[in-house]
Image (tube, rainbow, N blue to C red; front, side, top):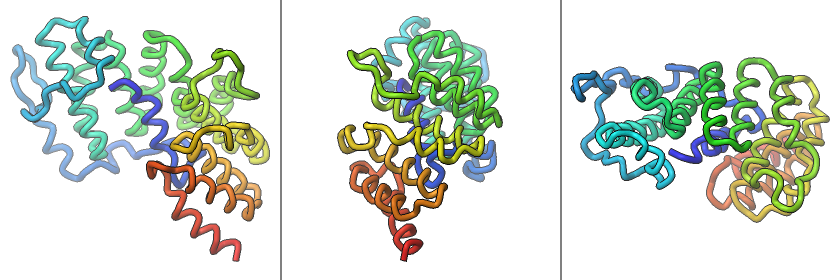
Length: 275
């Protein structure tokens, strides 16, 4: 389940690209979610039901390697539950996802991939307090700054934009040379969350300046550039610069090779607004 933090953050891009991801816990999942949380006997413990089609081999190699620190039987069971979590999140079935995450946290919570999965479930469900605690834990386990943007977004979800800004100080200013800075995706996410925090604090002009960075045009076409341009267009719209917003939204649509945003739809809206 590695890269879940960045993936979860990337899913935020859309109609509220500079706002925290706010899924109503238990309110936006499938109506039959509770019936899917079945249980089976596993080594004398109650475990959420996992489809026989899930083998655990669906996980990425890094996650599988991390699970090898567990006893064989527990490693396999945990792997299958992690895949079940991913499938439940795709269905926005947060009740089922939480059942699986609670189980693997209880039995394998010292594995970074497990804590990451738990964090993602809580984040997706809008439980920002628990998500923040879990992201902090996995950040300590793995090191680096790749979890800082999503941790800052949790602070925003908790109504603490100033704390989000403090976390994201390292993402302000030009990207350091010589490989000393964050990777492109992490930096883009950091800038977007930072701009959102500025907007939360009523600093709309500062949000625009936060996103006016060389990466707007220097990044290769793809999801990162599209998300950054999309967020910049939204920030421009918030300060009344609708013509420029339309221009940058069109650029975002052209950059979005994988359909990660709804930029094409927004272009139509902005074109109608500017008529």
